Amino acid sequence: MDIFSHIPFIIVILLYFISSVWSIGYIIKPVFFNKKVGKWSMMMGFLIHSGFLIFLGLESGNIPITNVYESFISLIWCILFVYINLDYLYKLPALDTFLVPVVTALSLWALTFDGGDLLITVSLQSFWLIAHIIPIFIGYASFTISFSLSIMYLTQQRQLKHKLFGPLFTRLPSLEGIDRLMWKTISFGFPLLTLGLVFGTFWVKTQNILGEQWYLDYKVVLGLATWLIYAALLHMRLVSSFHGTKIACLTIAGFCLVLFTFIGTFFMGSKHAFQKVSEHTHEKFE
Image 1 (cartoon, rainbow, N blue to C red):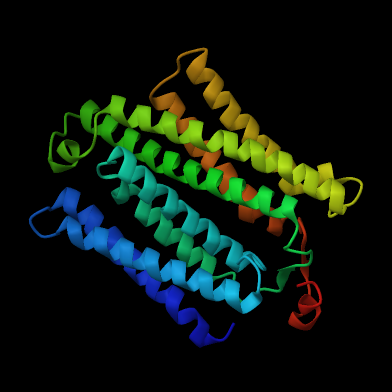
Image 2 (cartoon, rainbow, N blue to C red; image 1 turned 90 degrees about the horizontal axis):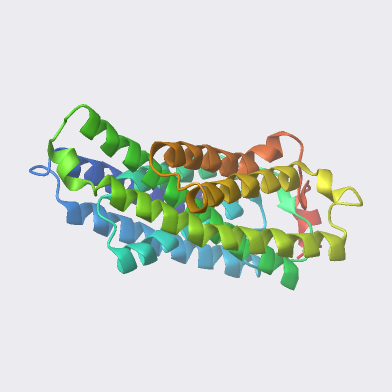
């Protein structure tokens, strides 16, 4: 992509950054920061982000996952899409303060992957591929929100422990409320992750994407490890009635593994249907 193609996403990042600053500023110094500025900046960024994804899809003639950069910004879009819908359903107070900075950081990170030569070299018209990607991305988005809720939980717990009953304490939900929302987001994301992994298994088996030893691919192995962590979280919640700090810390660990599974495996040599090819070669696969 040329430099001008970056402009819409750079604008998106700037809007997310403004939203982050105003969201954080509102809970610390509400006199100087209007919460509506943060909300509207995020929504404007999301709308431009949506338009940018549509542009990328029309340009390639496929869903925008033809390279690692497009996959990354599609995941970030899913995070905000899930958040906006959950916020509408549950009225999540102050979550944007913890989530939008994460989205901003991920967006900046995504920008570093543009210009890379890791391009997807399989047909994007496969049902199993689409059925694999959509639930996985929405599941990962839910886990990103649960991660932000975990940071919120630990922050509020610290306020209580040190008796810091200032503006931050009053604007955050109760520990019980945050814990309940963590449970809901993990419960929402886990079945989607499960579906995505099952459909992904059908995809690699029917298309022979990763060869006979597909189960040794780093992304496959770490995807299973991620599934086991969140399965353990749900088990501890349902059977052992674990709550609070332990669940929050495990949720943070789970999200770190999600990020490593999504991006880190490429640095370990995993290609996962991506290959280092030229744009000319890539056109043959579309």
